[in-house]
Length: 273
Image 1 (cartoon, rainbow, N blue to C red):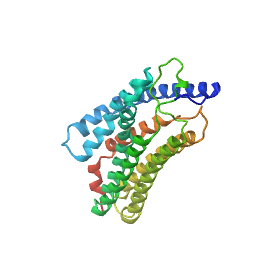
Image 2 (spheres, helix red, strand yellow):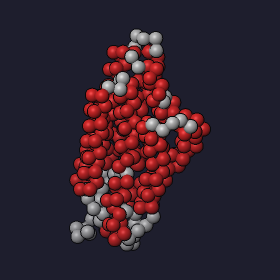
Image 3 (cartoon, one colour):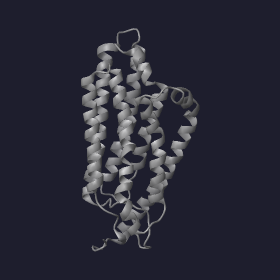
């Protein structure tokens, strides 16, 4: 690394951007703790006291895995390490972040499946989409670029960041973000179509409408943040690079948990056609 000289201005700009990523991860962990504390009483009543189901497992994953993953990320990003140490754990750390996107998309797709009547064909299609996204994430993680150029770490130690200036990094990140957005679009289309076909003119139509509005609201927020973070990443502007990336991984997990607490999967049985 470091064979091609990099302008000092670009070095300073990227170091400032990476320092911003350190602040962002701390802010996101604070947001996770705050949201967990707000919903803890409802969570105990509606989640922990209920029998174990696949949906309950998904909730537990969305709620508590981010604490594990971000704890690992704080160790590698916020603390300073030698390049040799970072090289050993670079791929492993990236792999630990994959579930942060996988779990909330799973919640949205399974809510879609329940709302649409638990059809086996739909379940198979949704699981295929999820598996495809997971494979894409694993491929992008294992074939992505290596450690950040050592010209950005003049002191010899810094956080363990991948080389975000590499064009392949931008393409891989864009593919993964696009896959997540497409999956959400599919789920929203299924929910909206099912509502207008089966629930709009029925006595329980207001519940179906609430379910659809929640899906559209969550999708809108996540879509906006994902497009914004993707635009920053693809812009080539070093100062904007990476902005919002951690937030895009955090907020969907929070929204998925809130969807479950305020509209449990079991309630969907009431509004099935």
